Image (cartoon, helix red, strand yellow):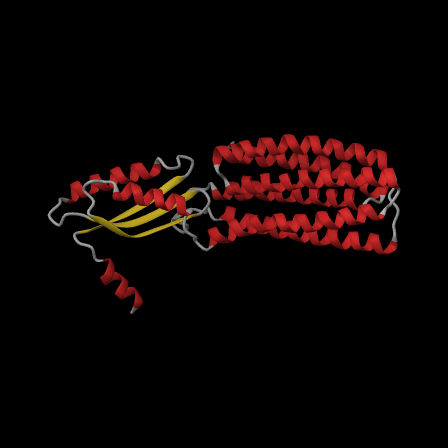
Length: 297
């Protein structure tokens, strides 16, 4: 089993346990903040299970029908995950407003505080584990999961603070105010996940720093006269690069292929966590302007 799949199983198991405990305390105490955290943990469970199947699908080898593989499934999963997180934030905001309007009372504060302390400790360990897997694999789904649980860690801390303040002041409106703030924060945190997924689906270029490094690897080769039409994209697992090399007109195909192999090996060394799919094209002269005119016409 890959580290990515194992990470989703661990995350799902933790989320299920936290969901059950938080729901029991949230419903019994009437705390919107704890109930919001329970709903978030329930979504964590659904999302982590969904991520397991997304990673499994993305790791499938290329086929005759899907010749570039199914790596973009991860991006689709990221967009869906971010959307679900946003919807959960809206629901939490709704519940917070209802509690503020009807002045509902918060009870069982001591058990609720205990549960949130436990949740913070468990979530912290989970975040550390997921971040380790994300750093090792550079997988967008695990990154999204890690980011989601990071926001949980922050929201759990805020919830704990709200419960302590209600315990000390007996002002139940504090719970509603903090619940509202958590809902807004959850929606804000989902934006980055959705943005990353959408950018991958739209075939955005690699980061400008990486593109600059690729340009350097190409131009520094002594037998390359020039290059043009450098294009890059990623599906979250594979980096795709294509470019035109301007070489000497009388150079043999064998020599041209040797030069491109050297350049490709240097580019792959930029990030050994990703699979690089590099497609060079050989030109005997710089025809960039001619090709650009053809594209414009």
